[in-house]
Image (tube, rainbow, N blue to C red; front, side, top):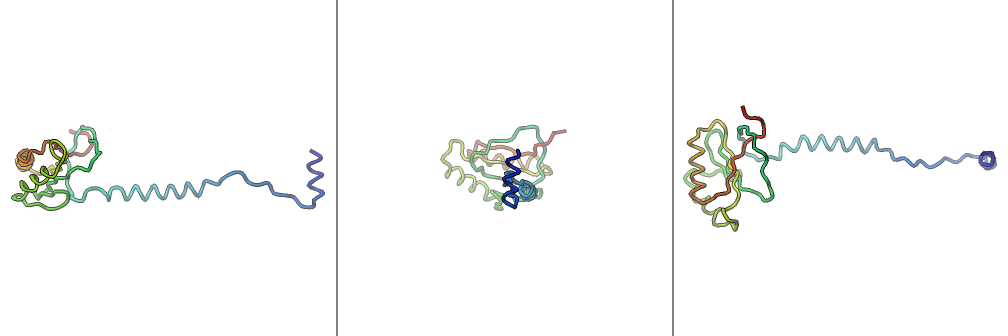
Length: 147
């Protein structure tokens, strides 16, 4: 120990030891800001047709491939992947989807219908899906507890 004090006193100035610690506080600050930005932006990236979905206890569906979104809003307007479709043109559009699909049963179709619609309106659309031989149909709901 005396040797260390003696050698530093001989040089006339003391050397600073290098700091071997990384200050992570700025990194944590940046990560928290990014987390907040993504938490705010993520809900804005969801499907564009506003539909008030009913709640269900069913689990989430596998989403390995992009499904076809068939939506019916509160006024009864039909949308195929956010594009408005007239009720009279729906059978032809669904038949074209079935013809273009290479999968058995056609492409996966997610039917999103507003909870305020009457049952008959939704069943007419499901009948058109059945008539077009699109058998891979899923009804979309929110993930909350049902009453």
